[in-house]
Structures are given as structure tokens and as C-alpha cells.
Image (tube, rainbow over all chains, first blue to last red; front, side):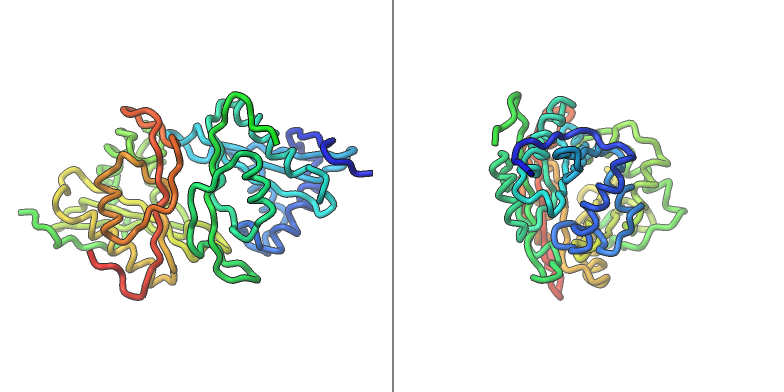
Length: 173
Length: 173
């Protein structure tokens, strides 16, 4: 039985690669939420997910990897105190709270690393469930990029910039 | 005599590298406008300026390179119809209109390449002259990132996201 709230987030290891690709592949193939070539192959996708300066994580539920995130500096030098993060979950993770847990843990990790804020640079405006989740997790919409994403079904749609200052105690969901 | 409005913008060639570095070096060393390590060396700076997917340009005035830009896709795939651009000018270019010419030509080039919009992801809010110039060139402030830049003199300051849809006829300055 899959139960909400029991997901454990830990740093990803090479043995997680298959599970991570199982999560990313349908997300990238759909092409509705990331600016990623829809035909990207496994190696390129994993290389990107683990690329410097990002640290990749997985969320396990009952021993099964059902979600992944990567978190790192959004910019170098004068902008390196702001983190960036991306998230993806398996279709089987719907309703398990894994996405929520990944966001919460990303904030905790980023704050522990010394980041003072977290920013999402490009949230496709039709990704309503994610936007709602991130707003509940304390992120504000601080920018709107008109028609900045070509959605495979909806055509040009806005993208949002979301931002959150990381307080000592992360916002509880 | 330096006269405004006579600058010519053309693609950069390897022989421009010294002049480009002369322009970029003081900008990066000051660290007030770009998220770039202030101690970046010449090779790294030039590599970044010419990095894929950007095309680098220089602005010449009476045969002297006094400004540079690079323009390219802001994101891949579903976001690749939006261009990004960066600009830098030599201290000797103040009042020559070179910055204005660089922006205008960047827009023309981007539109000719098929880009439908141009976005600046991270405009340091204390960079008032640049912001004013870009607003005059038709860019809107579409986002504000609170305290996202650590300014070497002013401490944490906001960064702005600026955006412009590229019409058939570029906005005249």
C-alpha cells in the first residue's frame, strides 16, 4: 500500500540511474513542463540531471524510487546564494505526497548549504498542479514571461518565475 | 572625434579577442552587473562570451572596437524561440550611443534568426543606466528577484527580469 508522507529523500547514487530515467523519460517525452528536447536520450538526460553545480536526490517509498530532484546554485558568483531546483515524479507517485516531500527536503538541504533563497526560472504556466504545490510550499510568482514556452498541445503559453527566501525554519506544508 | 550614432555592429572574429577582453575585464573585475567570478581570467571570459548557443558581436566606432554583445537562445527546445543577450561597453564609449546600437542590432539579428522575443534573465537593479536604456529599447520589467544579487558595494540588491516580444519592425530608439 502506498501511503502519503512516508517518502524518504536521499542523495542519488549511480544505482538509481534506471529509476531516475524511468521518471524523467515520460516527462521529457511529453515535453509539457521542461525546455528539454523531447527526444533526449538516457545518457544526455542523466548527464544534465547530475551536472555541476547540481546535486541530485531521489525520493523512495517502501524501497522504490518514485521521485527525483536536483538542487544547486542558480547562478555563479554574485548570484550563487540563490538555489535552483527541479523535480520530477513517477506516474505511480500521484497522491503519495512525494512531490511535496521533495520540495520540502530541497529547501532544507539548500538552507543547510547556506543558500538564502530558492528560485524556479521557468515554470510552465499550464503546469497548474506544480504551481499550486510550490505556492503552498511558500514560493511566490515573481515574474511572468509572456508566451515563453511552446506547449506541444496548447501552443505558446506563459512561463513563470517563482522565488522564495529561505528562512531559518522552512515553511511547513 | 567620437560621434554618436556611427557605430557599426558586426559578428566578432578571433582578432577582436583583445578588444573584447579589454571591454569585459573591467566590467567583470568590478563585479557590479554580472554574476561572473570577479577574478575570471581572459580565456574563461572569452570562452563564456563565445559559448554555444551564443553569437558574439562587436561594435566599432571609427575602426575601434568599443562595445560587444552576445545573443542566442535563452533556453533549448520549447523555450528556444526566446533569445537572450548580454552587452558590455568600453569606458571610452560613454555617450557614443554604442550601447543603444548594440541593443537595436541584437534585436534585429534575433528577429532575423526567427526569435520571437528577447529576455534578460538577471538585470542587477542598481544598474540604472542599462535598465533605462533597455526600457527605452522596448523591454518591460516582467519579474523582480528579491536580494538575488550580492553587490560588492551595496550588498544584497534585487535583480530584474526584462522581456520584449520582437515585432516585425523593431522598436526605434
